[in-house]
Length: 151
Length: 151
Image (cartoon, rainbow over all chains, first blue to last red; front, side, top):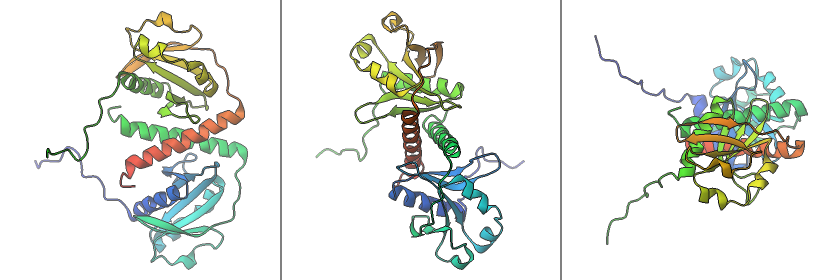
């Protein structure tokens, strides 16, 4: 029987995750606190959510290729979870595919640039509060899991 | 010239920080997301703040000794930042020193027990929102600093 390693090699990051890292750095440079792979409600997941200094909520979906974008039919649902919505793509992405009313970020693994700022569509108070609360609890629990991994 | 290490040894955790770790584990077991060393406003710092599933905000001050407790004249200020306030001490602490109306947690580095639940004194909405927002942003930025340390 062949030996199997006790712990598998960590998976290599996917292209979209590399873009997400650059997006997080960009958001931090704009004073936003970023959180990756946030689940605002069961069955929905956004690539990056950012919380601004005045409580502004931005959502960024990261697309690494045309196929990655065209297979995602659910993006309009993301508008329900933020004040502003952005696509983040790399410099080779055919940006003419993207709806003009969305925000646009060009990013790679090391950073990004905010190319187009979308109109703001403010969340209603109750939903804002529920997103903020889940953002806070998820961030603190992930932080705690890194700080105290024996949990 | 003697060689000096490039990065100093990390400081050994203080007794209060060990209690704080046990408090965080206890809070997690009660469904609360914990965050250590939270600064609700300039010049104030609480040892542990916890955010409950319904948005409840608890503050826990960790005291490792009688001297540590009696030198802290500012604890009544903490009541302004939470719905419930607790002291956390180790099993050798003279608990008769502590005000009876405060909550009480007996803890060590590995966990804790909630011995006395204090009355709730609900925060006003504006302050709750500002604490929640700072909790969320601080947690996410600390998490990001651990995930992407080259920032």
